[in-house]
Image 1 (cartoon, helix red, strand yellow):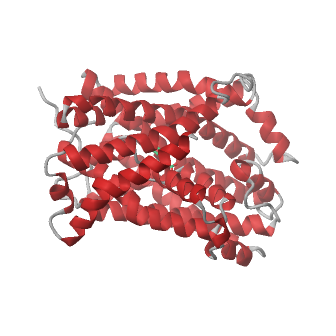
Image 2: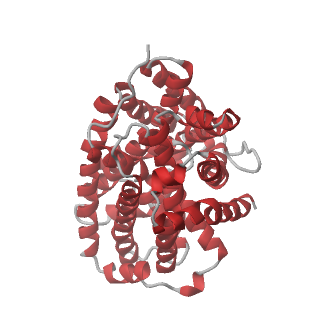
Length: 434
Ligand code: PFF
């Protein structure tokens, strides 16, 4: 007996869920620090142009393939041509590997929530962070806790689990982000922070910066893993793909920019280097909060913000794998969730131990955590996205007509999809491997 495929209960729920997937640590943690390292305003400008004209294409491809075929990633590519089934698997492998390091960061977030909730603030967050992350038990335990908390939602299904989680957490997330940004704008470094963000300094404009911006754009939009394809497969028949894609892009970018507006004024007020890097969220920011009046409160809501962002993205990663297991192995949603959770748990433990016990265990000169992060973001994401564009553009019957229609704009999208975007992705890949 064929079970009817679940559907989002409304268009707005679909948009909230895809925004929940896209908005994550990539926006709040990665985007500001990468922008800080790449010259601020000029990076933002390049990123906006790339996202509006280039990334829109693979985004429409995934949404379109999801809407047309209404299947998980593996079956979608298999239906287009059984020769392409491997691409579905490649997407599933990628999307299963991402939570294995992403949830380690989720575990750190849980720890910081506890620290700020109990107001047990350490004197020096730099020492605290390296001591905490190098422990054996606690970081692993919190990673698994974060994993189980995330898994509870896909376990309950599309409407009762995923949709409800997003409909509650995303508005909360937006409110907290607005409160923190408004607060940051009252600080003495606000003007300097905003100038850094919005005034382009063309001396930073080079090939590496463009490629970094593109890599970040793919990661933040959750493209190249079949996630958006899977969420698209639950969309209603009358949903307009291009409009939905632009809505998603606008929301995701708005939140990333707001995250910058929250972070840079704080950074400049305390004289921290904006290029401080990945430790900005776990060392510099908590250190600054601990020195502010009501700092424990602001610190707590900052980590609550990171928590909501990461859990809604985590849900979408897990759902992609779960949907593939349900559709391909004919097992129940509950069983598929348990198997997915077990696989992620096993791989995430060595990733968590990369900061202590296994810090000297290196593959290709990288710890397990770094290898997972590097290989997924720099190799698999652009590679999968390239193949998705090629298959949608060259091998899917009537794809362009079905998704873009037949007007003048459709012709531009046609050229972008068939030639320009694949070429750019090849450049990203070559530079990512170097
Ligand atoms: N887009 C998410 C972020 O910006 O944090 C990351 C992500 C979500 C990657 C979902 C992969 C995925 F399937």
